Each structure stands twice: as C-alpha cells, then as structure tokens.
Amino acid sequence: MIRISDVVRSILPAVALACALGAPAQAQADKMMPIAIPAQPNAIELGTGPLPGATVQESWHSQYGSVFARNVTVATLTPFLPDPAKASGAAVIVAPGGGYMTLSMENEGWDVAKALAAKGVAAFVLKYRLRQTPADLDGFGKALADMFASVGKAPRQQPGDMMASLAPQIADARAAFALVRSRAAQWHVDPDRIGMVGFSAGAGLTMATTLAGQDAKPAFIGIIYGSQAAVTVPADAPPLFVALAADDPLFGNGGYGLVDSWRAAKKPVEYHLFEQGGHGFGMYQKKTTSTGWFDEYVRWLDMHGMLSKK
Image (tube, rainbow, N blue to C red; front, side, top):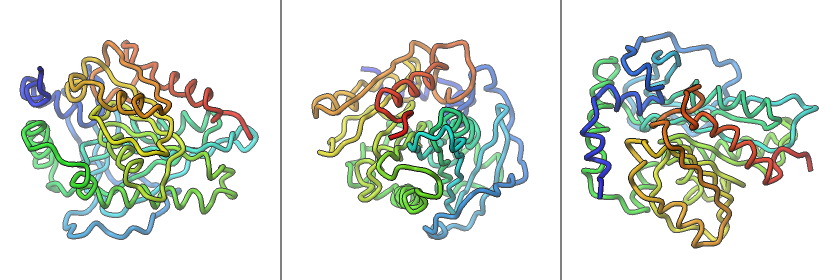
C-alpha cells in the first residue's frame, strides 16, 4: 500500500507548497511576494471573536498569479450575489483551502463565488481563522513545507479529537450559516437550500461542519480534493459531491472510504476521479480534465434543483 507520507516526502518542497496553495503545475517556481491587505468592502465580520492566543496579525501575499491570506485572526464572510432576476434561491458557503495555515482566497474563493453567482446561486466566501505561522514569508514557507513533510507520520486522529482541533474553524462555519439564514430575505436566499463547498483543508472544514457543526446543517456539500477517509455518516447526511485527481499527491492514494461511507448509508453521492490535475487545481484553467469539475458540479446542483426557483 502506498502511504501518503511516502508520496509527500518523495516530491520537491516547491511541489508541496504548490499543492498547499492551490497552484497550477506550470507555476510551481513562482515566488511568494508580500502585498497589502486588499480592500474587502463587502466582508462581514462573523462575530466569533479573535483567534485565542494569536500574536501574529493577518497578512497577504501573491503567488502563482493569485492571492492568499495568512494568520487570519478574525473571521469574515463576503457575499457574491446573483442578479435577483436570475437568483434561484440556493446558496453556497465557499471554504478555500491552504492547510489551515493560509487561504487561497482568489482561486478557491472569490473566483468560485463569482462563477456560482453567474449561475444564479448566491455564494459566500468564508475567510476562517487560521493556525498561527511566522510573520515573515521565509519562515511561513518553511512551516508549510514542514507541515506537508509530516503528513501521515502522526497517529491518525479520532473524530472527536479532529473536531476539537478545528473548533475555531467550525465555529466560523456555523456563524456563516447563521448569518446567511438571518439575512435570507435580504439576500433572496432559501434558508433550507444553503450548502457548502470546500477545497483541500476547506473540504476538511466542510466535512467537519457536516459531522459536528450542530445547527449549521448544510443542505448539500462539495468535497474538492479533500480527504477521502471513511466517516460515520449522520442520519440526516446531505447529498455529497466529490472531485479528486488520481495523481493528487495528498489524497489520490488513500482509497475511497468517504464515498463508500455515503453509499453504505444509502445517501446521495456523486464522485469524479480525474486522471490528472494534481492537488489544488481549483478554478485554474489547466489542460487536464480536472478543469471541468466546476461544470460537473453545476450540473449536479441543477440535478438537485438548486438552479431552479421554488
């Protein structure tokens, strides 16, 4: 059996960083460059408070033609609303990835939300709180590489421990669902048709929210290049969409436990395994068929009635 840790240790650090940050393969050598925190006039603070014990403040950088946030200490939600004439009433909370150490705000956040809004689905980008990393980019890059090198070495966490380790992020996700439901009339959203889609670590947060998010209760979920580990499926589990590349160095060799769990529980699940695409393809336009994941996801939403007004 091929272990994830063996795969990660066998690839260059630059590739590991590219995977974490959602980079296209052709841009792996791009250097991280600090940038000013972008204006986010529509971002709404979620009220979950500052990250406990945080000493390093939020900063941003550019890389791979995209932008990323680090050391997020205060969670926000940014709405991307469709034309009211086109709005279906469905909504999606979008959770970018980045190993809980950074957030791919553009490729796995804003670009996804804009594309959903164009289809008539209200989208809300969740900038959730992150684990603290060094303020300087060199220190951050080393911390990120060390994190990827350790994948698979630590004992596997039990579900309860995993949920406890993501307590701030789950709280942010719950607050996001509560905010959208509280403003459903203002945003032309059906409170019973709010789903969540996540990428890599954001996919992990999406699953954690589904399993331990209490009142969040997403109506449908998307796991995009996230862990495929088996889970205990709740009785009220929502329809599940999964997209993964077979050559994903993190999750491409870990089996299909997640899909098997959903099928065994007789819950709706759709699974797309693309031959190529690596990890972190997001909304990047690549020559691999993984670029088509979004179109398939939209068709799946339509199949479940999320593109039609009630």
